[in-house]
Image (cartoon, rainbow, N blue to C red; front, side, top):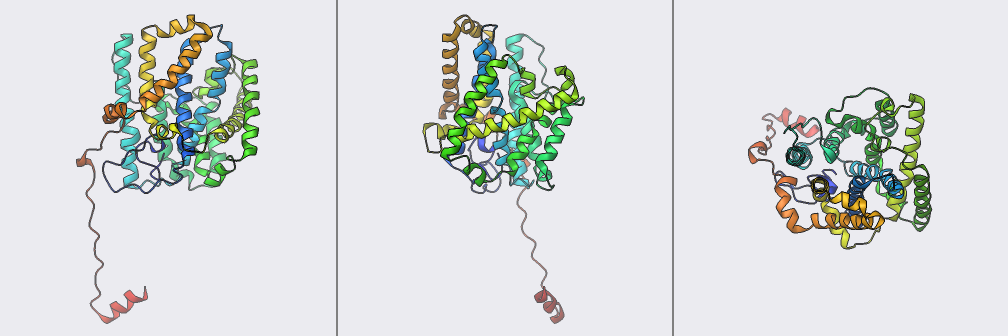
Length: 378
């Protein structure tokens, strides 16, 4: 997600810029990354769908859900940081950040508010400082991206980000702009900034893949044994130790453990991602569309009672729901849907807001011989 990637939300979409100079060619534009993006957006949609059908009898589903939540957002954020490495705050980069992140956030914040008003009968209130549902990720990405030059300018940025994250969980922080999640998930973004292609290459080995499978099997067994713990609040990183009713010391130790487990799971996931071009590769280049749109479909389905039918259908209903969630992600990634939603997902920056290129000012020509000699000496 950077200027070095395709514009707008970077690795979540692959359109061309609407204004300004063309973006530099995207590095690491390999099938591996697009495959990873598609699989991650599928996991996001699955997680949001599963949450609607939890009951005392969905012990296994909760375990799978907790396993997914242990790594899918950290992986998302890590890749966001990786593709933000060359962000320096140039005007063209800022413009792409505005059109690719901030503008879609404001548009969909308004749209989600309208949907909630329509479905739930709540008072229509558009609150851009209080992200609705899954929109927290966009405002978090906006803040993280703007902070990139800071992390590139200091030593030990990952360690500093970990300290910031832990401190955020042991202090009282307001929820404006999803600040708790912005700070608590920060280490994954900064870690992504520090990664290089050779780090991913180490995960693309047969040995890494052989290790990844038992890691996931063991993690699923642990999640099943602990289910329904850890609670969603631990995994979603939106509350501190006070709301979790644990002491600061216990909170810090458990958060460090979650970082370690998350890193192991993220590495294992990336090791298992196919590296060859597949049918999902093209879909992985446009993941912003299903990310923003699937939440609306979930709220509509919730309102009309479709998830109640799934709960009453037991395991068969859960399997059908999972298949539908994958199908919805594929559908929302197709060209017809993107054509309809493009004005909302990839809005254009009005031309009157784009500065005109300034002609370079020619250097003054020395008129004296001494002046010419000084110019040559430079």
